[in-house]
Image (cartoon, rainbow, N blue to C red; front, side, top):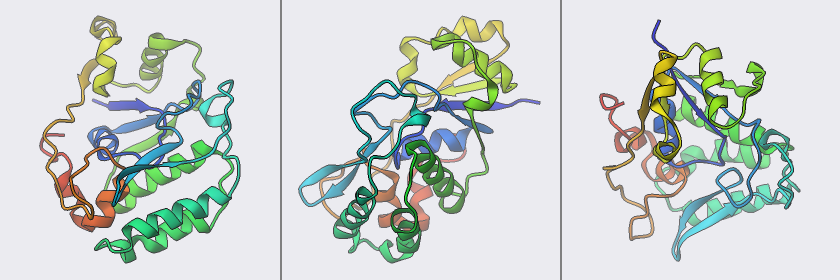
Length: 232
């Protein structure tokens, strides 16, 4: 049976393109047994404010000698701070009250010890509960990989029985299509162009922000401003 797969590190409340990649495949694999990188999307993302886009950053310490799934969030106070920032800048959004119980549960209802656990929970719940995603989720750790770099992705795809691999466009610079062909796996890169604008609280429009901006401004209509299902 054909099986499309995507592989990515978990990010903190990612932008819409991350979720479109998830929507496009049968299986999405969190690749969190990789080296953690500071000042990346793993522990931060952007929201809109009256002064423009600003970062929500989870404090995770400065050490890079860790895998992503080993990274601990330094202290719980950041959770209330992030909730308060979201409330400050989105309380006037049309769907703030709709998603308040979810946000309170995430930020105020539990102290998150591991960054990966938080990220994956947010991504899976937003996908399934608010975007109608039917994609299956797995973790790369279960496949007991032995390879590194590009060979690692190929090994993971083979062990997941993938027939089609969907990648972000940035990987065009290092993925070699012939290596996929040898293994009977077709390769496709996402196209993130031509997303429609939507009404944000604070003009001008800023596309590169967390999916939360869309949910709080658009509610159930969020899917209408993502990639059409026929394109996916």
